[in-house]
Image: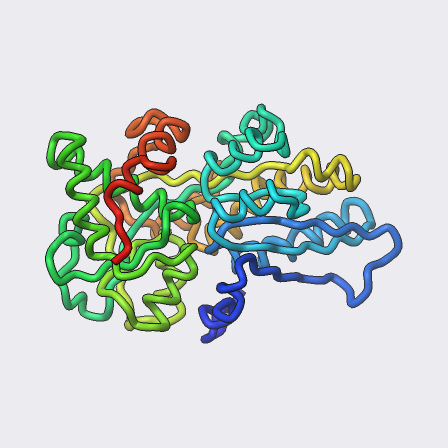
Length: 343
């Protein structure tokens, strides 16, 4: 899909209201027996799923003769998980981190406990990482995480309480500092100084992209890799993507929302929709939108040149998994609450 010049501006009016709904229709009116599927996803996947949905609709029609309409809902990953728990009738949840999907298991049994075993690669059809976006010429000379804590550097990153991408950002900075400085206490101080340079916390990753790219706030945007490359692709030399020396391997997760699909009779199409993310066409669309294909060697080779080489560590390696990371850093009264005070 060719991005329009106003791709950032489109969701601006809807961000304050929370979840954004987008739709792509194969026909102006649904055919008899047609299905509607709601994909509740996180912030930066809008363009990717518009493209992927068109491919899946063609595939499903050819396979079954049936029309399916795909609706999309986007926002901060944690906020989206809460919306499903509160009754948003998602058929599939394609959230920014496994911890948010686990919340759907814990709070209401919306998703089965074995959800991560149902699909390849721990139900992560694509991966990403966290990089930086700076303005043309990189006027502040930003090269690595330590540059984000320098006095006078304004950092744009979303709120870890509502955004999955923000949690990846936070943990990537923490793990870098712990490795570089040698202790949890020094890592805590490092991250506190970094967030002391953050003037505003948006609720989701796309909101932070708007703040940086459209409102011209900040010297550096800490962002999903795919969001960073989309920004540069859209605006060219106005922005530069900087890969730090090390970052976290982000593994967004996908799951069928069992309680909803069984009630609505959409399990078959919902399962096929997620499985198609692992198809050769699905993996190619993933790479085209600057995500890292998880399983297709063909797509991995095709898009390898667009991904910078950097040291990547996993959430399990660095923090003992999402349950422990949530407890230590994002629960009420945990490290983020302790270090961040909105001025």
